[in-house]
Length: 105
Image 1 (tube, rainbow, N blue to C red):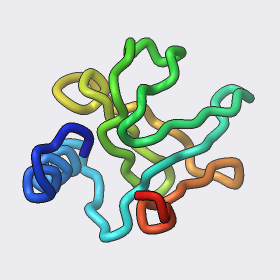
Image 2 (cartoon, helix red, strand yellow):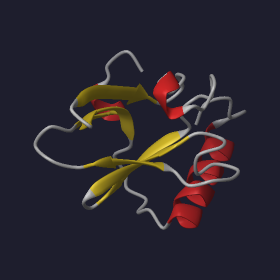
Image 3 (cartoon, one colour):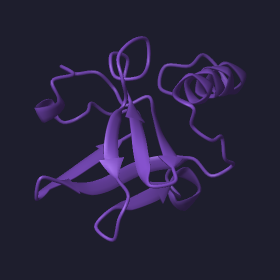
């Protein structure tokens, strides 16, 4: 969780987001996601701003949830404090990288 004061607070916020979005909480957490949207290659990463095409200004990606057939991407105004999360279709053209896969984290 970007800007969380400590691991306990980060887990509390993550759990609250998951509950409000009806997303499963898993041990493996998504760090980065790549997918295609209308034939355009997209990418997002927790802690970095979402692409400007989603009109979220410079909001950071708070979390990415794996929800069976799709991914739910959260920023403050998209699934965080208000609004709906951004949905990315889960298919052969999408790929998730997990925090546990990122040796620099």
